[in-house]
Image 1 (cartoon, helix red, strand yellow):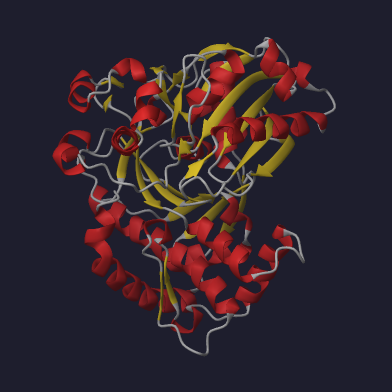
Image 2 (cartoon, one colour; image 1 turned 45 degrees about the vertical axis):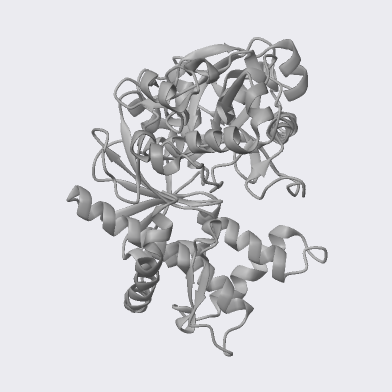
Length: 480
């Protein structure tokens, strides 16, 4: 069988990667670009909409340039994006304002009035905020579109999204279509949103214009992808009960499979899966990886060394600090202005802060792991991990120790990319089922077991983390 190759755009919150993946899950070309600093005139949780397209173009060009057979050998193109991001556009698809990111926590005046109707549809709150605070922008917008719709339109001219992204808008969870009731009550008609189609369906072909911009071949099929965490769950095989994964990137996402929509998931979200008719239960810790980046940018000289070498320095110094960071506990909810360094003393160094940030992520994963086990009456013996944080051996060990579970590391750290490639492989007919795609494209690199003495220390620190969580819970719940 000749090699089949898929081009994946992984559009993140702080950067974009473009990756070429074959039908056996091997990466053949890759490029990453971190977005430039957000302009001062924008809010912290906004981004210039064209930033995503520019990064997508330059990274795909670089990924293809490093692959000798070139664009002609690529069988399909697929987009995976960070979710819950909305952009106002005009009739030509041109952004009229910045993209509002998923980390946005501005509150509509109608929040309480519409709370029961809107429920977990966070993106709708952003659009209502625009209606109240930027009336001219709101009224001039032809549509409010998700990131996948924005990128798909630039690639192939199809303004389409899929359930995992549409779920943050006025969606009807029973039909996976826009809800007439919610649209009527909010005063924003359904035609203000992109069309919803199923993941893995072909939505178009690369246009001549996008071919010039990205380096892809004109006419290459574009397959509808899914949200980043849905792709990650698919890429790690979390498509049946009893399995759980944790992704540490800009934020941390703890995910397991459920057979149906969970009506009241407490501090978690019940979201459509990448495979039609499936659901995932998802716990979110916003800004955990972002906190590590924030610490780097604020307390290290980024001009003196490369950003990656500074991360290596931070991890190396954190490794010399004992488990538990000498009682320093980081509460990682900086995205909600609720970040806390607790038990801070004069004995704590920069290395303690770095390790405490990594441990705060571990405590958050443990919280969601325990909550899911209780809610679903299941016991997860292992934890599959991915994302940028999984590249760190120390962070992997901290997660294993905090959760007291064996941590499974895939060969390809970016399970979002592998999951998206699986979608492209099924959508283009290379594989007949997602099970077949997983069997051929997923490979394990490492099993890491918890260290018993560290497990004991982290169990004690986790109690401190829980006390902080209980103290701030009422405030945090307003953001979920």
